[in-house]
Amino acid sequence: WGRQCAYCGARNLPLQIEHIRARAYGGSNRASNLTLACACCNQKKAARSIEDFLAQDHKRLNAILAQAQKPLRDAAAVNTTRWALANALQATGLPVELAS
Image (tube, rainbow, N blue to C red):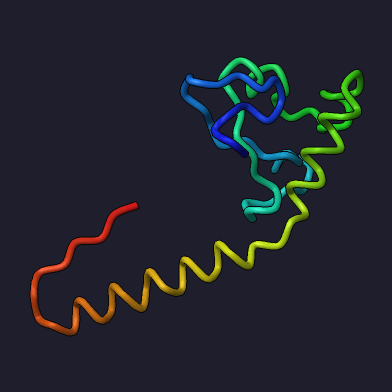
């Protein structure tokens, strides 16, 4: 999401994980339903639909929906490599600490 709020484009401030489709209306915790939002936009959107929230900004709405549909192939490859490396390091018997 380019380290910026998906809804207003704000940069250089703390971002929160935001559900594109609110869980209250059937949205999931899957990566394809998550975006980043500043606290202000996250609170303004609340459980509203993204279509309602961005009714006046069709360009941004379409961009968010397109980004959410992108395949996660690259992220899956990195995640697989990370666990393979972690397992190989743990097999050495040396202390290994993992963090996200």
